[in-house]
Image 1 (cartoon, rainbow, N blue to C red):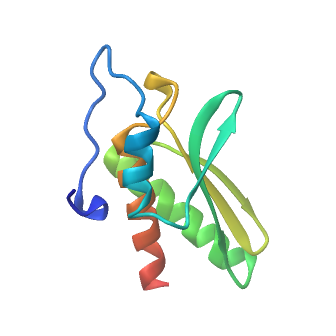
Image 2 (cartoon, one colour; image 1 turned 180 degrees about the horizontal axis):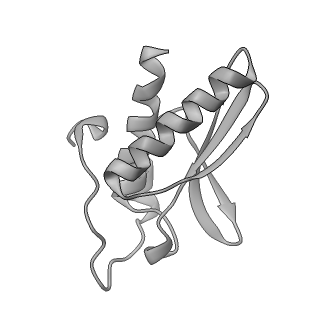
Length: 114
């Protein structure tokens, strides 16, 4: 499997299915700090990032937003004092797609320059 953080998102085609549990487990090996949670029955990747203050949390939120715009794939973001929770999933497949793992890995990479 290629390095997820180097991949780009691909458009979901009509009829694309969400990932199998086996595929999810395989991709999660590259993003071990992300959990799989279900919200309204939809599996999503989730991770909370810690920061020393609100300003740095907000700066990170904005960087994730820029990344999302570049790739045209958008997360749920919850920013509060000292932390940001990021959730990735694909609405079109009502679950997880390779794009979500790519974006999780690229989100992780944003923290390397903090």
